[in-house]
Length: 454
Image (cartoon, rainbow, N blue to C red; front, side, top):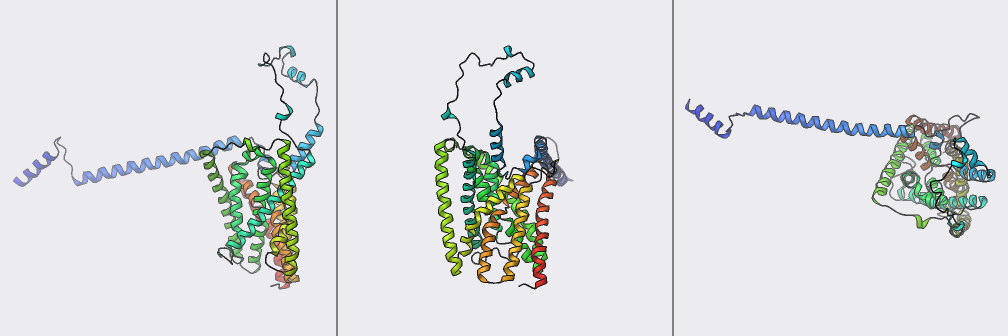
């Protein structure tokens, strides 16, 4: 009794307000606080997820009224803009009574229509202050020149990445695994497309339309290649490695889509942190236009002539670098063909323009290049000589590698997903991959199986 009285006194002394706490009470309080923190954590997570869903819903509402053909032309619209500008200029006429007709249609008397700045003197813009526009033929040639020069750079970069990550050096990619030789260049091109093809594209256009097309369509379109990717999967399937081929397609699609997403997010972060004024670099005068054209034309002639000479010498002697220089010789026509086909993006099919959201130009460029590459691979196996193999490999590297593209393809898929049309993105990407692979199987794999080519 005395012991319990002493314990009670100790308890009351430790708790002057008269409350008695035991171990069960402490555990109960800890459990309650833990449930509260867990509940708050779930509420915070739900708020984050709700904000993400809200942002996507707002994006869907904002982009709901955007013409689907505009989304199809995000990646590349080809020479369509140049031709439309020429047509507009040819059909443009000044109607001296157009202003009066507009005022009457608005329901206002002509005498009552006054500008809020009517009391101020109107200063006409001088000719020197206006942005200079090249004549249409020279403008078209300027686009072709930029595409060619940047196409050369794309081929050089792709070839270098093949050698760097291939079996000869880092041995991270090969022809016998789903990690195909062109995977690093497709990753890099897709990442850069997020920068210069989406986030910084308006800034590049502010400087020069020719530069924008050169970087996006010329460089990144030639740095990446869809036909080479498709052909490597055909090589795997023709040898019976079907699981590797399917894994290479799925893994490749996932990696390039993630690459452009990371590129966009990284570029947006840089854009928020650093503000850059590009007005001083804007090419808007005749002298600047002509200076850029002269420099780019000189670069084109120099690289092209040097490539032709080196290609002839190295193909004749079958020395190292023959494939690269022959690829550079035939690269410009490949870039031009893809740019020309891109005019079909957003046009639709038939008189009623069905499927305007489908980038038909990019789709045709990738499928046609993949089919031609499959046919050349069969020819190479049939002829089976070293020189013919080098020549056909050069054509595949240069012309077909530049005619097909992954960067533009993945930019179109990314834009469809971000505009709330994930179904269209799956249809477009799936149809491109499946059609190219099926046709490639008929063109390449079937003859290999029937003729027993090795």
